[in-house]
Length: 316
Image (cartoon, rainbow, N blue to C red; front, side, top):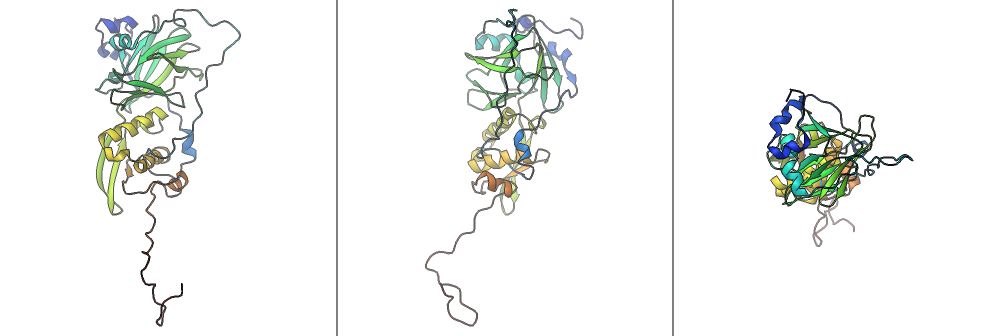
């Protein structure tokens, strides 16, 4: 096989690992990600991900259809394989995204080819090229599940429920949208005009270190580069993996602070979230720049009122 050649789709099942795909990996950035809609509302923010409502994002539009009949190529009429087949013979997404744990697999249909481009931020850009229609099948890790998010991205969960991989919504070279469609226990990757590209990331959390800030315990969270300004799936991956690494960070308040930082402070080196901060409304979270403080404790009933200047108790 030449340096630029790609293995045939079926080669995954014949012992061809990612080392054979390495010839297609290009160490460069290829595309930028769109900033989530919520960031416009959160430019003043600086905080975490969680109990606050997730940003409102319109569902990814389905591809517009013309009056002509749908193509009847093998790609468009492909029969869905089961998840075991996809995992056993497909491309391991976890290895593609430079992560060790199993994070699901991608199996191109007959006649489709896959190119892997290193985004240099902990993620990879996958392009699947083939006839219009179903281009590939994806499956979550064994015992896990897949969830399509409101923006068309996908979270692949492991057996424990943790997000093992985040997969962006597919986009064609002309800007038209493909989609991930659930079909039984697998997902169909649909490209209405043929080739589509999408970002895959697995390890969303680079570090989480406890310290002190403003007189209380504080957790400094460092997200992977691909999570910053990433899709809803990327944000869910960070929240899920953080909660797995630091269970205390799964509280509603710390998760809300995290979401606030994700959308309002994507370029901040680390995001500090605190367990002692109160659970507040979204409006309060924004106006406090992701750092709400507990309300002052009112004086206990029955205590004597402060004296007036010159003596005597203050009037009620």
